[in-house]
Image 1 (tube, helix red, strand yellow):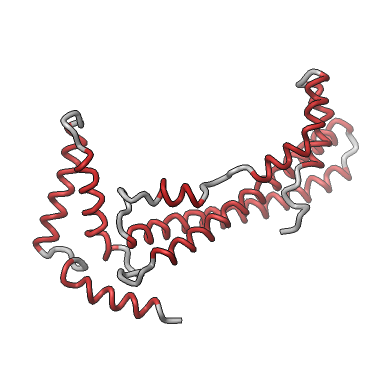
Image 2 (cartoon, rainbow, N blue to C red):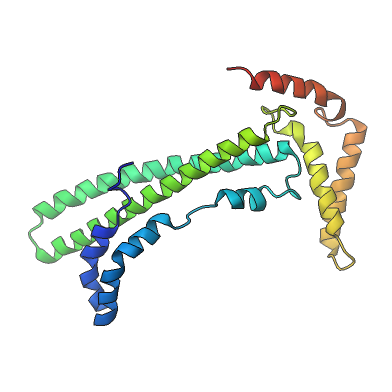
Length: 231
């Protein structure tokens, strides 16, 4: 993506004269002087989560206490950003077409007021385009970081094809953590929900209802490791 993209300086500079209708003269003058700084702020602002936030906030050990749980949550997070990036690409293309249509209408328009309105719409579309480019870059950064985290947590000891195979162990850890936080002041619905899920999970694991739990784990791990080495 070339350097001219995501550049709001031309739009901000062109629009600054209209700020006199909103601001007093000294404030509008101050704004014009701050345009380069504001452009820098706009480009480097945080749009989505940083890797630090991904690690301690999203993939916190209490909720995702196993490598498998962290891996599969990374899959979900990465896919969310991928799907949003694809949707954004369609919006971006539509916006480009609308920009071209407005540019043609402005050339043909004879009425000065209509021409001015279309020019305002065009500037709004150009600003929206720059915002889409900034958002796309931020989404791509998340996609790449989640890819890095997936590789980090993939230790070859769990099935990386079927999310179901790790969940009994991972949820058991999560529910035990929740149980440890319960106090005499915890609400009845909260206690009922945590203990109900925990005891049910213990029962179905013990009864053998879960196809992928217990005795099958070693077999699954071996298959997963073999698949992960395949080209």
